[in-house]
Length: 262
Image (cartoon, rainbow, N blue to C red):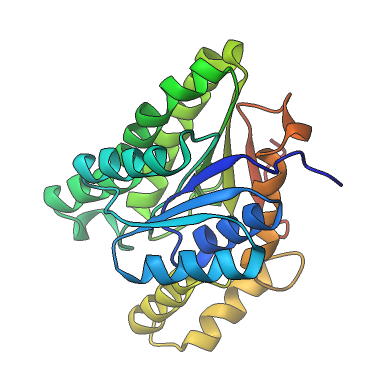
């Protein structure tokens, strides 16, 4: 299927590894110019690797999405290089795990900057251009936790739900301008974040990383964790011309983990 994306430009946050990297590669495979950001210099190497593999122009920008000035600079550098941003993928590492009483007020502030404020600031930076061109795609990487909270992830459960409310409202506001806003809900997927969660469970429950994976796999009807490229395929489709009438949705890629009807 031709997704109609060749020649478009995307900005993908937190794309040095994991889900962000997989999304950047999936878009590049469709002929999209890709700007990627992350907090470390390794993002430049990641951008070069994507360019070599897929034959598209890329840009790697060192930026911390929790810092508003970094967000502005990263978007400005992308616009200076590519002139437009057609597709925005908001993404960031998950906030720390733990029960409510383990998190200080400062931890809540840091988590808010990471999970909610970064989305708001990135959207604010790209929307004027999208509205001027009457075309745009905003994809927010959130979590299955917005439909079925995950024990021990109170920061993520709370703040990703806030992103859902923001995105649902924004979708209505920008729909008349040809802009769609959708949330992608990864389930248990084989990334560095999942390894961290497994190690945390192993320490607190006197188990092992293997037993943590086994417990997750028992909860998933497909009997396995997902792979990043399976999640990225959804992102490429929702960014495409083919998905022009799909907006304000929360779409899970979870192997059937969510038990709810909606």
